[in-house]
Image (cartoon, rainbow, N blue to C red; front, side):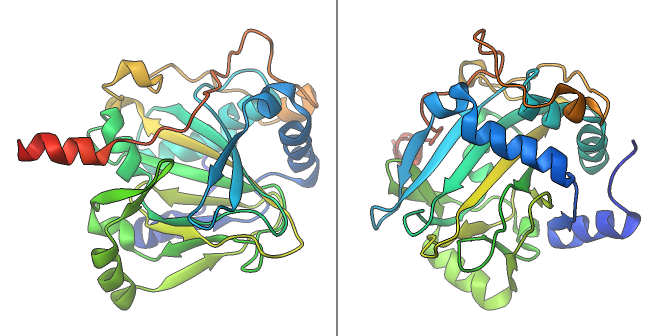
Amino acid sequence: MPNAMTPDQMAAYDRDGYVIVRGFFDAEETGLLRRAMEEDPAVRDHVIDRRDQEGRSTRIALWNRAGDSIYGLAARCARMVDTAEALLGGEVYHFQSKLTAKDPEVGGAWEWHQDYGYWYYNGCLEPLMFSCMIALDRTTRENGCLQLVKGSHRLGRVDHVPLTKTQNEADPARMKLILERHELVHAELEPGDALFFHCNMLHRSDANRSRDRRWTLLICYNAARNDALRREDDRSYVRLDKVDDGALKAAGLKFATDANAEHFTSKPYVPDVEAVIARKAS
């Protein structure tokens, strides 16, 4: 199918830095993706606990390639790839995917950051990148839905500073001023909804203090012409083999193979911004 966004949605993405496409995956497809995140041994064996400042844990799993698993097919299906190419103006490739699992009453918070605040250090010269968050559960204010600063993608890349060993945050002094001048939006989603947001969009999420689980699948793309320069990070260009939209249902509950075509990672990528600052000062 062609680009899944209407002209109005495309305009909203350009203006606001994000857009929600309701029902991007139907109930059957969303159910397959949810079960894969719950049951696939490859996902389970690569789960990492990422703790916030209060010690609350968000469980994440990360992979850098889109293979033949049900979630690899989701990243390669026509509606996703065609929409990505429309947003980025040309050929795209799969940059990263991630399960973010905020379990009831224990799921941790994420502080203000931009994805490009991390990805810049992979050697991506331009912010020709975005993320698509697919809701596997209902995501609400109570269970820690994503919060966005509307229009903040137009501010450019904001300097980030270390917060914990597994998290950097956007400059707090600058964030205070940004929040005074820009609208805060809570992205509440139903299962199957997709939130597309620009890599310079400032975003965060609260801890999940509710009794409801909040699991999401994020699929991230880079423009092929913006290929990551650092090959050792396993995020450089690999041609994306687009499949028909019907491939998800045809595949059913298909897990990753033993060959690790998804390239699961053992730790999150957190650039050492202190070391960069020290080098610039020397």
